[in-house]
View (cartoon, rainbow, N blue to C red):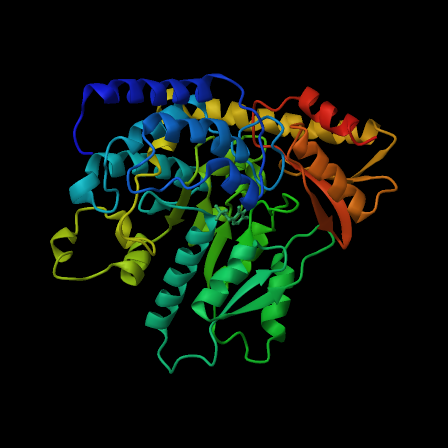
Length: 452
Ligand SMILES: *Cc1c(COP(=O)(O)O)cnc(C)c1O
């Protein structure tokens, strides 16, 4: 295995050609097959003798890759898709070939230096001080968990009396499911904050919940606000929440901007993020709306030392790494070994410049607005929620939930679109999430026309 030979030249060329074609051409949408279908198509792939390169590669090209949705397809519009720039996708292949350990400065200094510059750009968009910093983790779920663990650690360190009866985090029902998941992992509770009729958490609502709490808010160590809810693309009243947090010394303010954080790159949208500069931490996923491949979440702390106190691992074989002057991503989240997963994002930013990111974000914003207008103009459709960012919710007049489901499955099976229903205020509706600058108003028109 571990030697280069003439037979590998052909292998290398085929893989490189595949990568180039994937970057060059619009991919097919593709879609899932059942486990039985896939098993029938592949048979056993792990054998004592090995299949050999040609057979294994053919399985990937003909069967397995076709059973994975291309999230960068212009009509992949469900959940939050992904739209890696060509150079970020290509650079990701290079990162894979480079055997970089991204956990410690000693081993990955150059990669970490580059990642830190990309993180510093995000921190500056948010108005964080130059002393802020963080690291890339796998996704918003991991980022939210680490931010909350750091927050609780800081609260526990500060606390003079005994532990509270229960640690709690204040968040709304519109917060991403990963907040409730983090609470379960941490064995803490969520103090629910109601949203207003626009689906937003306001400072007043947060203040009321804290004031009404029978325990006087004891044990509440953090507030999570969302800048770009996943279901509807709404921003909480960050400035209002920040003001309530500022009036209490013991609260950590975390902003979940996993999807919406990219909007800070747009001058048109930036005012809506007012208040994020007061946060103690935030996350944004470059693999969502910042044109980087999976998987990359930027996790930023106002005071990285809070994270270091919570996460640094100590052992005889690690202590050589703990030089004060060095920046170890492994000390800043719940992980140790890590891929330098921020590098594709950094490379694309370095190549294209931040202005290009603003232009691309604005383009998706325009497409989302065009989509909303198309919905308004179609007699069989009704706009449910105009896009604040790039999520459009709408209904097909006269349809029941099963009609939406049947249409969605057919659209994927035909290779037309990945577009799935959601619910909004109890009603099943359709949802488009547009993060791909390659998605055009014509793509949207094609999808909407199939709903007649
Ligand atoms: C997508 C999303 C998450 C989770 O991010 P992953 O990268 O999928 O783990 C968290 N919060 C919000 C608001 C999101 O949109």
